[in-house]
Length: 629
Image 1: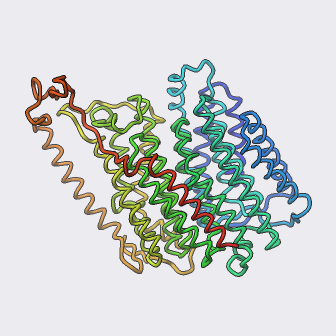
Image 2 (image 1 turned 90 degrees about the vertical axis):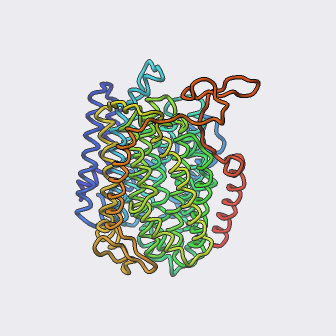
């Protein structure tokens, strides 16, 4: 067990530092791919080992405490470097509170530093496997990225150091049982995201990285307050003991609410979504890592981890309302976007809201839905981000309007991207399975279930629109032959395959990974059909129907290739040959016909919704915090 923990938590720190000092790109690539393989194998080995508790040798606690203060002072240095008053205030507050806690309050009694149940093991798998694939994808991507920036000196050593360090910090976070260790890794992820968002060094990159840092530093303050308060109530740093004491100790609701607030900031829940939207300026592998397997998943993990402690309380209801509101609000905001990465960003925040809503509903069925969402969303969303990065480097744009008819130009990437989209909106794939279970579990809460249903409906609009545009073709020309580098093709193909195969294995995943968490199983699984109190989700029969429909569509597509396409009719105003797609416009000037989507900015535009959405979200958070008092 100690060897596996070293490989999953400590070795990435060592490998990251090695990447910083290895200037030969070939050697650095070997370190990144080797580290990815080790993390993947170690995460699977940890899963087979099962649940455990573990305490490292004496002295590691002191080392973590020292590292914690060193990290906070490093963040304070960047606060002065970028002259950010908010980061200065939030960081100094954390240093002061932590110093008082360490020197005058806490008794460092021996508690297990690491603890793993099925939730932790699932998170380690997601972080180590998906995160590693993203790092491998980044090797050829960053070469092209730096060619585009015309850099004289490569910044890849620092880039890969923080990418790999991120994976180790996340593994440490989800395995920590000592709440002070959890806080340390929580802050490491904050710093890594700051450095990666600002990696390109442009004015907009630095501005958005500073915003991410101050918002997550606010979360750090909330975490420290919650941690100290929880210790004063329970007298222990053992997270499992704090959780066990939760339902019976009313005074514990306030610190738990503060820790939930910290999780909200990390998961970019409204009104904190702007830092994650701003993170889209970073290279695509950073966006994929933040959205699918690391940074934002840390926020939902923290809320899910402590959820049993506030079950049945007003805090639980508040968390459910905040999460459901984020789900529907960000789904609405995504409709007005044509920037592919921004659509993915809003979609991520929306889905994280759904996970947090499930944590607030706090029943076995809801928590099951949350865990399944973490798994399936991570796979499909990382696939979509990497596809968008590949498309952007090829066509020079991330605007989905420029992806119209992309299949003719990039057939392989288009098909993989469409697989990513369909696995998020169609039955019987895992994301829709988890949404079905989430909506079913919210049946007793009118406001939450309505917001979940509306959010799910809005989600279909922007995903279906995007997929249709990529598959639309202009003419009967045979699609071009697309070539992809090995380290681009391999992660994309594996993630697309995983999105399908894991959905096929959903009953097995539920039975082996999720059900052991609950003494009262929320579902019954038999013959590939998952049955809940209000209905059934027939995974395998639905896959059979989907397969038959796919074969029919494939046959129809082959027949369509022999049909001569016709141009759009322009009401008799066309000029010249109708295939030229030119019509007589205002002032008798020729106008080229162009197709475009309607984004309903007057209803769903950021300038229309963002301010009222943020105000409403702040009100819900105040309500949650006030209800805990």
